Image 1: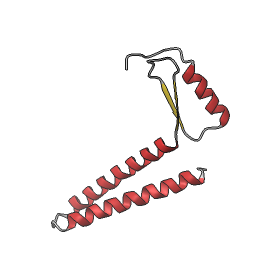
Image 2: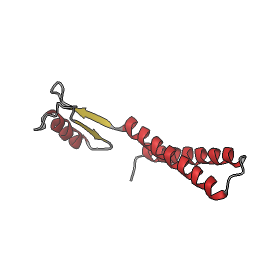
Image 3: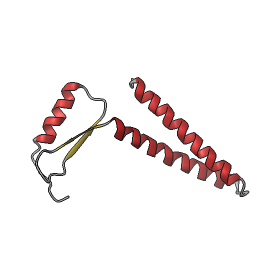
Image 4: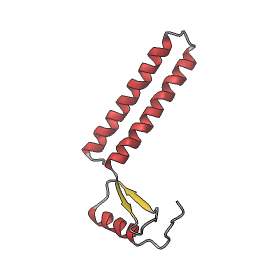
Length: 103
């Protein structure tokens, strides 16, 4: 079961996407486009907004752990993990075997 904040975020994301797709369809309706083209544009815009909102919510609620070696680009992002698992990921990020300094 997702926490309440995650469920609210999912509902807001879905509502935002439906509203954006509907507004797009309404604006394109005045150009007298075929229904299939109108529907495909509206669904595409709604899907893009859904993915963008979900990604923004993930970035807002995720924890990022980076390697402590200067120049190393190793990162770990976690979301909704226990305190023990969070600590293990912190240790993994700080003490991983391969240091990628090419990025």
